[in-house]
Length: 176
Image (cartoon, one colour):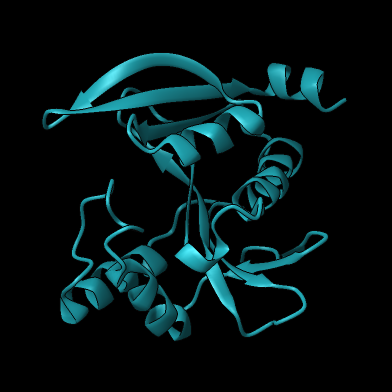
């Protein structure tokens, strides 16, 4: 079971199927999913995709959290993940997606900071990575703000991405 988290302005709780409608509405916005391929406009495929993600066992302390505004606990802001990835080698990936109304408020950074703390202090991961479409400047900026370091440029089906990483040692230097 994933823990709940609270920040100054946000509440994060494990994502559940009851969040589907809010996730689907967010993902139907072409600006939100501009840099992310997926079944965003087909409700049945999107529901299946979300269901498979929620049923999967990612490991202790790993998975997806839905993000809500603390002052408006039913206002879905987006989600954040901390899951294993084997893109280059087995490691743990952090990622986020927020609805457009939440953009520019620092919510992604705020949520990512609490998830990084959880990853390094509770789960005891050795390294966190993020693979971000190079054109997605706001997400690249979030990665930089939370301390992830640029590692290399990658290509996925002809699309350029920036690959970031942060080790536990680097994290504890940034956040003693």
